[in-house]
Amino acid sequence: MESPQQNPGEDYPERDWEAIIEAVLFTMGNSVELRQLAIAIGQSESVARQVTEGLQKRYEQENRGIQVIELENTFQMCTRTRYYENLIRVAAAPKKHMLTDVMLETLSIIAYKQPVTKLEISKIRGVSSDHAVNRLVEYGLVGEAGRLDAPGRPVLFATTEEFLRRFGIGSMIDLPSMNPEQEEEILHEVEEELQMKLNGQGEILESSKEGEPEI
Image (cartoon, rainbow, N blue to C red; front, side, top):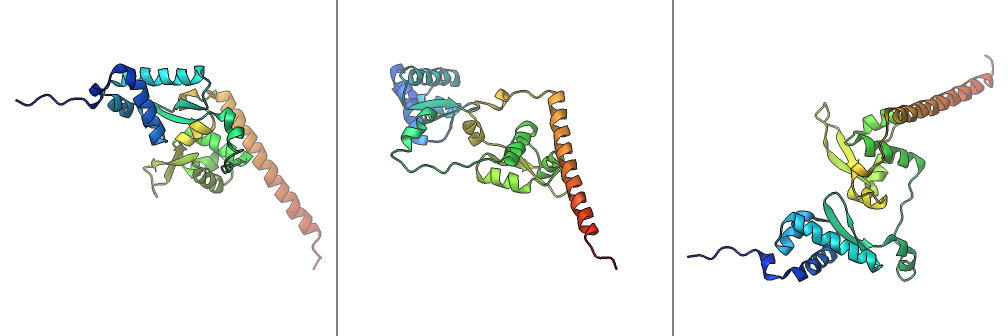
């Protein structure tokens, strides 16, 4: 008679669960799904969450240089941001991408409207957003999230885990809610800005015409 298959985590006592999860997070580097942490200790996801949150609190209480953050039901070990300046004194400063106002505006639209196409973003902004979207993808803040079931099957874009990390957001539900009045105000400001640009171009054209020699 075969013995029942043993769960790999059952070889370890409860006192080792936290250490196992710590080892997994440290080794993986990137975010790890809760179900994977549960497999690592051979317990349910609810137990894995409890142990991981205990590890989080321990790091906070002991004021450690690293922390465990949650990103939409995944966990990741990373450097505590307030020690960043100390870190770069002994290491080459990582490249920090600066976001222009246009890129921030485009990123905001994607965050609140995702998944969204470049065409939809451009309609909201009133100008082409191809360059801004491409740069956000390059920076890892935005990524492809499938294709729209429409002619040409345009790419849909959505925010990434890097977006959550960069802005200190645990989940997209933590984004501030935008009421219809705020959305209408933003659209109105974009329309005004576009109209001003069009008027400015018209004045330049009129000025150039006035300067033309009569024939």
